[in-house]
Amino acid sequence: MRNDRKEGDTMDLTVNCKVCFKRGASGRKRLFEGEGTEPSLIHTGEILRVSRLMALAIKLEKLINAGEVRDYADIARLGQVSRTRITQIMNLLYLAPDIQEEILFLPRTMKGRDPISERNLRPIAAIPHWNRQRKMWVSLLTERMLSP
Image 1 (cartoon, rainbow, N blue to C red):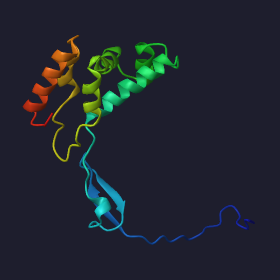
Image 2 (image 1 turned 30 degrees about the vertical axis):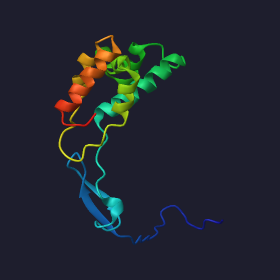
Image 3 (image 1 turned 180 degrees about the horizontal axis):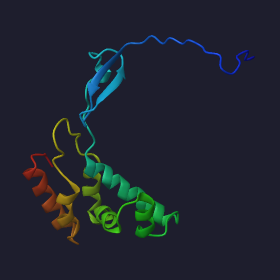
């Protein structure tokens, strides 16, 4: 294909499409293609932050095991966060495997704050017995009005 344009030449381009504006979870306006009444634009909720942190902990553990990063200090430096925060996130791996799985698949938040936070899970992860963790987990879910 030949390009006959020279530097400094201008070209007009027109794109026609329907768009709508909608506010995201952060309150910012976002631009979506299509009309606002299309089913694809219905808000499907936000993934809980604790679910994202659980996935991150699993991913970081794999990076350490593969030798791609040496330790938590390396991760903290790369992520520009404190070693303490990395430790808090990685402590989610001390939860029973079935609890970890439930955290990964918690229902999305449709509006308002997440019902469960990483801070809520710290006392549970600190218990070395998985059966006790499970009891505390069910109690937390019940307290936060989620079904176990």
